[in-house]
Each structure stands twice: as structure tokens, then as C-alpha cells.
Length: 311
Image 1 (cartoon, rainbow, N blue to C red):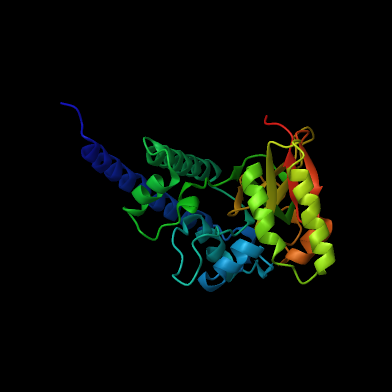
Image 2 (image 1 turned 30 degrees about the vertical axis):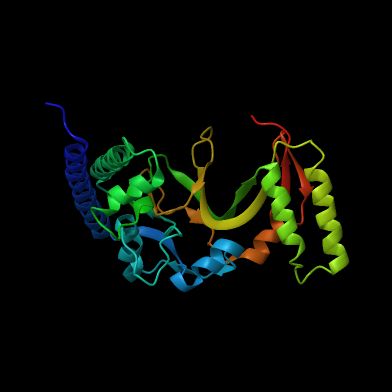
């Protein structure tokens, strides 16, 4: 007899519960094993976005984020517990991802820790695949996983724990921003210009703003573009870069979500740079956007880009 959609959803929900329980239990064991070593570590606690500031940060970008370095022995479990932080307080925005970058130097139990991380990451991948199976839309996936736990942070639940087996010489922590484009058809952008023309920003005079809008209208009607993109800087995220002791191993740069496990250290904790507090103004000074061949700037100040052809 064929399984009904309702029965399949129940089976999937039961399996998801089992995987979540396994992930949580193994992370708890991992934290206990590493904590007992009193490991050398460093981590950076980043200010979280409050619900009351959510709309402002979504529309205008994050202005600043305070960062506190965790490196005292009594802070260790705060850093390690980042791997199992699957819930936020109600006052914290669920829109912005939790991140607590850092690195932890393993002193013993290397094989046991590596195997635990492998099992955890395998379960996370299986859970993510299970949630996506037959659920093509983000809303359907979100509704499914939140029917099991209404307050769970899905991004954190799927995030793999990073373990590095090669010895690391230097660790750099820094900030990066991701430009999120809003995509317009030509017709949509023409309507957008008409709306924007009436709202003159404080940094422009009426004449300056009208000239800008006239330029956009001319470009929009030129026939050169298949669509128009407007970049909105919405996300600021920390990155980690690892420089290895052995020559020939390429530097490793990734988003720094939770502490990296350094499982191949012979000479102890590597040197590292401190993650500074985030400032949107400072990022803008050094930020540049490199466009692919199929895109050109229409107005760099307003971050308006014309798409010449689709790839």
C-alpha cells in the first residue's frame, strides 16, 4: 500500500526528531571532552540584533556591532556552547544569523573528537536533506522544521562544525559584507524611478536628485539592459583565514560562524588577530565591488547596476 502524504510527513518528522536528538547529544559529549582538556582557545562574542532594530537593519544595513573577546579560562564553555546554540531569546531577531567565531586547540583525544565531529556533521547533512526532500519552497521547509520545534534556529542546526587536521601557523579574523541585490525588470525600475524622484535624500539638492533620476530614466529606456540590479548592503559577517605551517597548503578562508577545532596543532595555539567591533562606515571606506562582464555601473553612488545579458 502506498504511503500517503500525511503518513510521509509524520515519518519525516519522527526521523527529524531522532536526528536532532542525536546532534544535540553528540555536541554535548564533544563539549564535555574538549572542556575537560582546559584547551587553549580564543573566541569573539558578537552583539546580536534585537527585534526592535530588525527593520532598520534590514532596510539600511547594520551600522555597528560590538565584539567582546573571550579568552579567559572561565569563558571557555561560552565559546564551546556556540556549537549547540539552537535557540535565541525572544528579544533577539530571528532574521540575522548567530555567529561566534573563534578557534580551539585540541591537546588530546584527537581521533575521538574527529569521529564525533564526523558523526555530528553527517547527521546535520542528513537532516538538511530530509527537510528539503519534497519541499521545494523555503516556506514549506521552515514550516516543517518549526512544527518540531517552533523556536529552533535552522541555520545553526544545519551548520557543520569545522575541524582542521593540518597544523595552523596563523589565524586572521576580519569582517566582510555581502551585497544583496534587489532585481528589477525594466518596467519595474521605471516605476521605481518615478516613486524615488519624489523623495529627495537629505544629502542631495533638488537639482542634483532630479539630474540623477533623469540619467536613470535615460539609461533605463536605452535598450542596453535586460534587467536592473540595486545592491543593498544588508549582511555583515565575520570571516576566518587560516595560514598553515606546511608549505603547499592553500590558505583557508571561510565565513566564521562558530569556533574552528584545530586538531593538528603540535606547537600549541597559533598566533591570531583580534576581531574588531564592526563599523559600517569603516567597511564602506575600504569596500569595492567587482562586476562580472555582463554587468556595468549605471550609478555607483546609488549602487545601480545594469545587466547587459544573462549568463
